[in-house]
Image (spheres, helix red, strand yellow):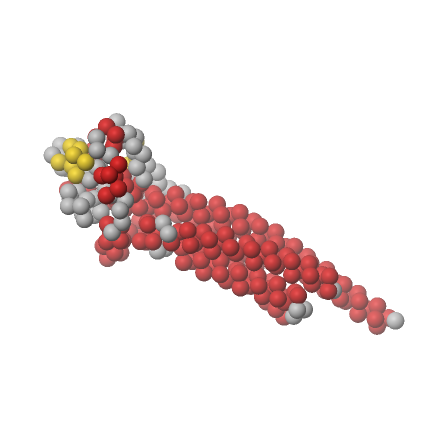
Length: 269
């Protein structure tokens, strides 16, 4: 059984290592401006990663120090965590299925519509109370002011590929027909009735289109892109974690079989 315990311990050590990409994915989200303002996914991911780390450490300790009850705790708790991680993966996939950018005439950048995204995501930004907090957070970033430093001519700006947040929050919708002065200053709209966002646009550099539905849609588009990246990491980690768990179960079963066989031999002799 000592050799089997060493094998179980080594397998559980890989489980410890697999918690690192999960925690890292959550930390990466906290460093992204949009996720830092919304704060939906990063903490569940980080907490789940930390719990997996703790449980895997418990299995590692239980194996090397031969503590059967700790190994049983590991097997039960890790199974629950794998189910939770799988549920999170499916959830992220479901809420990010919908939504994509729309081509604007004579523009390289895309524009975004709020109705394109899942109802669950829309509810995260449609409440005026929630959006006021998110808007204040977004307006404190430099994502829009940076455009003024990079683009001085309308043609250069129209041919650039903006992020969804920049497209939705830093300029008015193209269909409103505003005239370009600089990336965050536009005048003389052609059709103020084209969209409610046409009325929401302000040349006040603290306001811009942060009150627009296009800004909310741009935020959700950014969230979708980043959450999809995180989900790839979670899927790969989930598959690896399932493999490690199954190997751990087999090693634990073999260890119990060896222990029973050893006791049988001792009793027989």
